[in-house]
View (cartoon, rainbow, N blue to C red):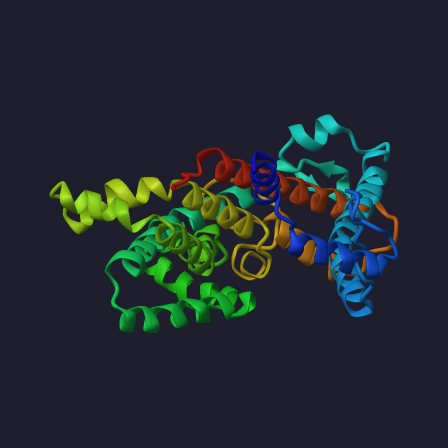
Length: 338
């Protein structure tokens, strides 16, 4: 009797796993191997031509961006190196003087950098507070109907050609500034160009700032309201600090956009290098100088020709550093919520 009970107990303790046996039989039948004795099945992914083509196309798109960047670096670096190897050019003169006149072998880059800094600073001073204010309104205050009206208007501003902005600065903004400042302001000046550049980059800063504000969890707002905060206090003291990393990234990208702008400064700021930080003066930025000189009759491989690549390399390095700073700000100050 005890032997029968022991046999039944063993039967109930180790019941046959019919599902596992069926799976092993199916795999064994597919691969031709016997897995009933504990061998591990080796499944092979079936080759699909369409999936392989899509994967190859996506890889080619990613590789193309890298190859394009390397090509830009090589082109700028090669011709800029030819410029710096010219006996008339020295690094001390290039980075340490303030006169840019290649016709008389004067290559002080600060004559162009000063105008670039001035116009970009004016643009940021206009675009940053307005962009943050628009972002706060769209994120915290605007109704769906108001948001549906304002967002397309901002998108229209972003889609206007920059040459239109340039003539708007020259023919509309400059006369207004002349009525305010009188003869102290020139027809071509950095102030009007900077103001219109601020309007141009306003959609970029406001859109990115709104995305950062909208990403803040609703629970933070509700906690602020529970503590008795008003909507304005919640927006400025809770939501805005929580979205600071995204707003900082928008600021850096806005600066990059302003530094790289060409047509507005080429039309409205002036057409001659001038070391000046006075926004009422006429001056030429790095991009404006490249646009003006490259449109003339330049002989290939002359010092005037290679100097353009040295300026372009400076612009490339400045925008690269600004983008790296933007990535650092996002990664360093990003708030993570569960």
